Image (cartoon, rainbow over all chains, first blue to last red; front, top):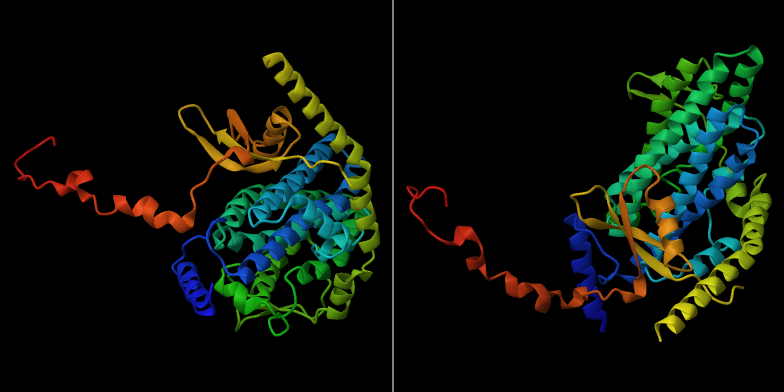
Length: 318
Length: 95
C-alpha cells in the first residue's frame, strides 16, 4: 500500500471513530491503534490477574464464612475479568501465550497498586472500597470506547465491579462500628491505601504522554486529573460516614471549585513502584510465574487427555 | 514450555428460553467438555444463561469487512423490499 493510500485509510478510520462508530477486529486499523490497544487491554488483563494475589492472601483467614464466600467470589470475578480482557486482546492478533510471556518476563506492566502488601484484614476492606472504587471510575468510560471487543468486555466488568466496592465498604463499616482496635485497623488501612489509590489514575495531565491520542480513540474520555478529582470528591464523604480521617492535611473543600483541594502526590514513589521497586513487585511476579510453571503439567495432561479422547472417538467411528 | 497450547473456543449463551444464543466471548480449553465447563464459570457466574454452545474458533468462517461493498451494498438499492415503497391511499386500512 502506498503512503497516500494509508493516509487516506487513516483519515477514514479517524472519521469513523469521530462518528462514534465501533471498530471490530477484522476492520482495517492503523498499526499504532492496534499496538496501543494491545498494550492497554493486556495491561488491564494482567492487572486483574495479579490483582487476585493480594486478596488471595486473606481468603483462608477471612473472619467469617460470610466474608470468605464474598472474598472468594470477588477473586473469582477478577479471574473472569482477566479472561474477558485477554480474549478481547487476542482478537487483535496476539496469542494468549505471548501475552503471558510479556507479563512473566516483566515486559508488560500491570497496575502498580498490586505491588503493595496486604498486612491486615482491614486491607480487604480498603482495597474493595478504594482500589475497586478507583477502578470503577477508570473503567466506566471504557464501556463506550471505540474498539468493540474491549467495550463489550468492559460492560460486563463494570456490572460486576459494584459488588466488589460495596463488599469492601461493608468490611470498613463493620470495623469502624467495632472495638477501638478494629477502628484503628481500618484507619491504618486507609492511611496506607489512600495515596497509592490516587496514583491509580496515572501521572498528572502535564506529565501524561498518551492522553491526546487516547482521547481521540476514546480509550480515555476524561483526563487523569479529572478522574482523580472525581474519585476524591466522591470518596471523602464516604470516609466521613465511616468516621475515618483521610491522611492528607491539605485536603479541604474548595467552595469556588465545588471540589476538594488536596496535597501533593509523591510521584517519586509512583515511578519507583512502576519501575519494579515497590514493596511487593518481586513477590507478585514470583507467585504468578510460579503458579504458571507449576500448572504446566496440568495443562499438558488436559491436552493429552483431549487428544486421546479424540483418537478413541475417531477409531470408534471407523 | 508446554508442548501444545489449549485451542481457542467461541462461547454462545442463551440467556433465557425464548431468546437466541448470543456470542458472549471466547476462552481457551483442551476440549469441548472443558470449554463448556469453563464457559459456565467465566460467562455465567450470575445466572446469565440457561444454555451454552461452544465451538472451536477455527471452525468459524467470517466475512471480510474489506469486501463489505460487494457483500452488503446490493441490498441498499432494493427499496422495493420494504413495505413503505408501495403508495396506497390512506383510506385503505389494515395493510
